[in-house]
Length: 293
Image (cartoon, rainbow, N blue to C red; front, side, top):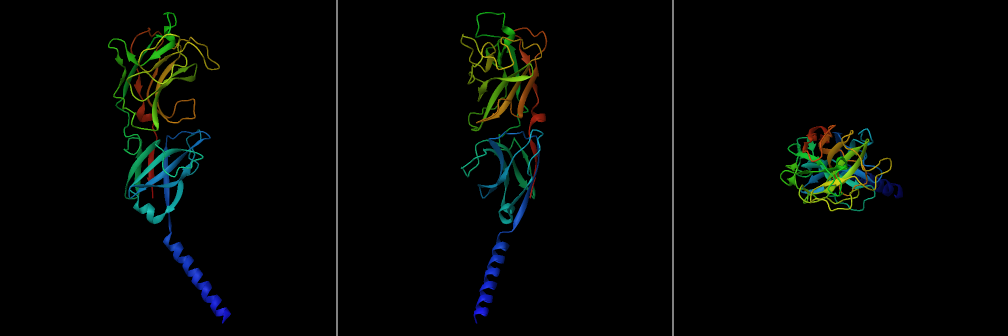
């Protein structure tokens, strides 16, 4: 009798386990994404599927400096995966106690059948492609009292009209998790001109400027506090490059992020105060790809 009871109990346990396994069948979510950058040691990418309006994590991964994902296939509950309408990719702290996605969402895409094309212009991500953005800059050092160092400052303003020289730049004030940042590449080393949310008003930094007040526009004079390996004042017409990037906030890197709408090499012989246009390189610098289930 004891053997019979034991056998019946074992069968019941096995049957229950089988039923549980049947109820939690797993599907596979595959990522084929290019253009993502290395986030360093403190941050990771995390995928999310939107099911009935709520985010469900699909797992985290890292990207090396060659842009290769360390994982591209993720097991997800099959029924939940089949019900997903949207995929979103966010940037998260590596040690993250918050179960919800961060505000820094870089890619999004809606499923059509078993695949979703993901891009930054999706409404769940940055909401625009930035391909319509235009921009110019001038070389000038308004924070010093001399004209002899005018080739050592860059400002995103039009001196003829006294207006911003960044055109069609979306306002990131409402996009928590992202911010614009200007850069001057000096002797191959990127140096920040400051962060800002929109093209009007000063940026958040004057780390290298002189003692005088600067104009109420994004920009920087490279006069003091030169980073290691550089000497200020400098001459930006000697191989300098001006860049506008879109940066995650917070950010653990001293270099520009992969999202760069505008870039322009400083022409040799560019006169101080001359408005110089930049090239829109948005289409060639942004991550995109396909997510399949």
